Length: 148
Length: 247
Image (cartoon, rainbow over all chains, first blue to last red; front, side, top):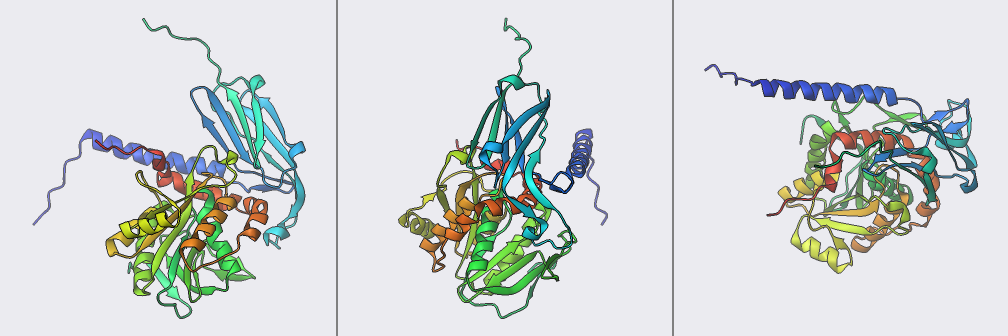
């Protein structure tokens, strides 16, 4: 017997389109993020970093293993771009990762996370514990809407 | 066993062993712990997994190609590791196949090692390890050994599926989960899990070398951590933060 096709409502169709769109957007974002975690020209390894937005602050963390504590530097390149650098205690070569078909030496860690919402970069607070760098920026507030 | 995932046995598989899972997940805790255990204890590759559900990847070791998902073992344990972030879409089939396979090998118990992400991990010197289990008797055993128990909440990912499939099949299963970073490799959390594993099983291991190599591991694990994070987003790992509804 012929099975009757279930009628799809406009909401079903919209939800399917949204799912497809989200999957495509995810793929696109990942393709932008696809790049090596090392740079032989600048002799840098890219550390892992994370950006977290709370109602009050933007918190950026970076995992800086093998970093010299005194060399950790944080610089605001613009209102929404931060440069994090640190010298490594011990230089590493591709050899140290078991890679013999590439040549290069790495002496520092560097990443440039983007800040997604307006913040006050002049009031950033920085801590470095357990090899994890943490930078906290207070969020900018333009105006307050009065509740009547 | 599923047709979509094939487990190819290379050597005789020990019977009655403890089966350990160290698949990429939060802080790569299980993967780091299992990789260290394999390298420190006398074990060899006994099987590997093949599946069209996985990306077209081989890993080269000493110039020779290897499957990224492999099973190591000796008389007392069988350990599953993956050098690949497992696609979230393949996880159900893969875990079901592994649990079914373990059952045919009459494993004594299945142990998933992993992490529980906490926000202030960097201020904790010694991460605490929590236990989960598939039966009341195993939970009591974990409590007696001094572990805190995960009583309520959500588990997401490989250890959640191991627990579910093992409970269905009445295979004893335990989860050892250390407080850890979410998306940074966490060798210290892995060391704490191994310490607890030594207390509850016959697998004894010295964790001092793992702690010494911590910084090196964190540097080397950056890429697989990044790819694992993408898969954790797809499997909605953040649901572990959710508060369950009990009326």
